[in-house]
Length: 613
Image (cartoon, one colour):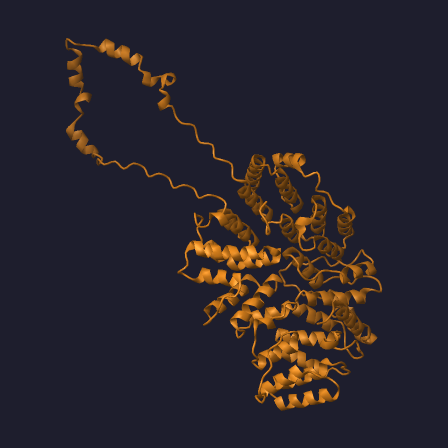
């Protein structure tokens, strides 16, 4: 594979080798300024156009060369994607070209194939670019990179059109010439092109065998390989045997293409989909389609816990307990990093939604709640920690039918209500009206003070406070929701304070309130007081200057530096940062307009995906 320094160095050499007229052509319209081209979706937020201004080029270059592009959390993926794909004004200074090459390399390593292809192509014409060899020697030129990425993207015509560019040098181009002939159905021409390449010292026994396999004359076709665009397109066109081991774990862009391809074998497709989903290159629906197609295939044998969980969910003969066990096992395995946990949770979202909260699932309720937060299903997260409301008791049913009013009038009053009888009784010798009158004055039923204790109204029962785990989930829901209502915020705060004080978890609760604040959610007054009293005194930064540098970069408006320094500090797990550090970082991200990334990073700073509070 290609090293990051070789990639950026080759891209820079290509750029610097271009004639001056090629670099300034149409500059008066700024149509070919590679810094001014955005590769983001139209509705996707971008960093500000002055993102590169306010810092020395040499400082930015050092940060970009050391930037992490693998093992990123979802928040880090969001930030690095915007760094590499947002349009902006070119940085000042002599390092601008080197920075442009590093930007293209970062886009490539993130798996953003379309953006990387465009950026490598924008680096200039490779007329005099003797920047090294491709693939085997590890140093491709930018034009070769663009062509190879276009093969992955399915833009075969664009890739082959690059062969018309004069002055092409390097081992890649003779191979591409043979591949393009094969793709056009000219297998004899492809074989001849490979013979000419070999005469020039370009050896590739696998490609030769793949071309012979396309022509149908290979007695033993090679196994498929997907380490680059040539391998990808030839393996697919020659229908070479594909095994899960062929899925490239370091080329998420190729994994994404394999996951989208309907002809990819089921077990290969689900592995590719997992890699692509963790890298943020396929969405939830594409992930689901890849797995559902595998489940529908004859003879599919689940080989991973995630596949087993999907299989259990689709199997109507499985009990709720069995399905819950399978889903929980897959989620627990995915707790290694937040990207994997989020991808797994998004795939298993529907399966969790079909499970009831009951004896078979209550021991997994907190895990399922955390998974639904990762999947963005906030209402579902609450369902797993809030007991269902008891059904109201049915009102007693009267057995005697109601008497019609007209019938009552015909019958007349009851004997005890007849005024004639009352008058006769009052005139009788045993008149005890005085006793009755006296008794009525002392009727204990009319004196509230003399009510029997058994007849006093019962006070309303005071509900038990939620467990800390349930309150913690409620607080995470508020942290995840930028539109949380004031009433929801107040209730979550009250529940968290009460549960934290009861269970002795005040420090964890205080960190949540601090992250609320840093993410833009204002805690109510009592929560602020609680935060002031209970914040962990030992939760200090070991190197506060690093976090302050992030904040200072935001003050200067250099959003690119904010992103690069942030991803360096978070290092895949923001929950390891002290409260002061993460607060400064989140404030800096908000200052440069990355509010959504700041809120997602605040959620990750709770460590919600890997452990209980």
